[in-house]
Image (cartoon, rainbow, N blue to C red; front, side, top):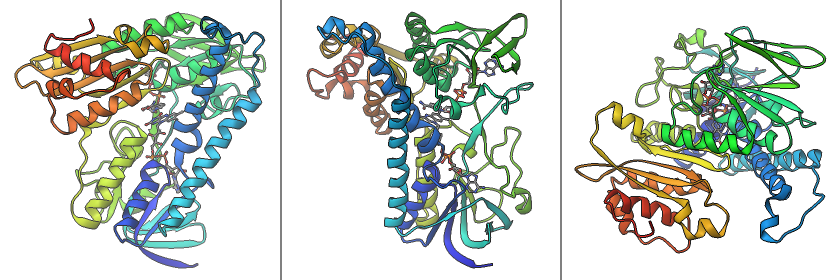
Length: 460
Ligand code: FAD
Ligand code: NAD
């Protein structure tokens, strides 16, 4: 049994793991990284962020051909869907990027192992026939789809996002359970491609955790687009047969469909890792608890990304990984959770950073809000993005420091970046308002919303 030793062994090559490995190698550590999947990049690159965004883009282009282009004087009558080709394009994007991660690890001289890692002892891990020891071990094993009590995910037609990014036919009727990020993104994909999509949500609102005003606006827009919603719908069972699938609900009728997409959250992935052998017990939510330096209860063993508490986001996972290995290698590292943006890549996109208006009200913070609609933005008018879009800047009433920004509209996910930087640098809404923004751009709506905090927007 070959045995090798490293300064750092990273378990998992998702955004948390591969980015940590590269940063640690840049800092001069001898690094190894192991993943049980042949393709590197984790959930994000293989079956998450990237393939879902590829399909969101393709399906949006398809939808534009279904009448939306006519007002531009572009006649595309007879456009049809080649789903196989759409999926092949998506697979190609994934292949390029996962191959890119392998290339980056090689360039940075990170030794890659393929296989399932399991702890033998504190800092010794088995990977198939190999035994790897390291001064530091970083657990970055991510998450897997969660289910509900009474719902067996191994049934045919009862799918997680992994199946729903790879359908070979457009389901006539699709029931999505959960109006969170996955439900709305993949629900949008299949609605655009022709499915009748019904979204069942346990709560009385969509997108829990997002600023309520934004979520309400998004809800209205999605309904107009043809997504059906049944809020306050508690699913108690899902049964599959050769003909279809039925969804039972508490106090409501049973619904039937061709397929069901379970999108009720994800759970940390620690199965088979042998945590019991080193005395780490996940908390009640299955997460590995860590301190401010990402240290577990075992010396030299760290954890970052979806497997630890916090939002399950690829960029959060990356930043935690970088902060963690910088602390290991240099003693210093930093991550400000207030500046982590959250983006839903539907049409329109929905993006937030900092605190929501709900948070500020709950905490009794004295704040001012500045709002600006895309309808009054020249670029939004020019590119058909004026219908559903707005920016809300929330600033401290006394100091004017930006506390949160919430954007719904075309490219909201890109527009939010300057707002995160503003919060990171302790900027005021006046700072954003006095920054020259190029014309004509959607970013002028951010500037105008910042001006509106002080009651002086120009274009409304
Ligand atoms: P993962 O990406 O899950 O990587 C963990 C890796 O560890 C995996 O490759 C796994 O094979 C490996 N592993 C696990 N156990 C072992 C073991 N014992 N031995 C060896 N290897 C092991 N986030 C965003 O920020 N933006 C998005 O647009 C977005 N879209 C998403 C869309 C979908 C459909 C899904 C499912 C998720 C999406 N996410 C998105 C969430 C994002 O994918 C995760 O937050 C991110 O991948 C977490 O990174 P991670 O490195 O912690 O874990
Ligand atoms: P989620 O937590 O975003 O949403 C789950 C939804 O299911 C919630 O609205 C919840 O109230 C609902 N739900 C729970 N139990 C239910 C029941 N019994 N009946 C009906 N509804 C029920 O989870 P998700 O959409 O599965 O996404 C998982 C994770 O992946 C999220 O943490 C998210 O951050 C990440 N993700 C991020 C992006 C992005 O950043 N764009 C995209 C996809 C996934």
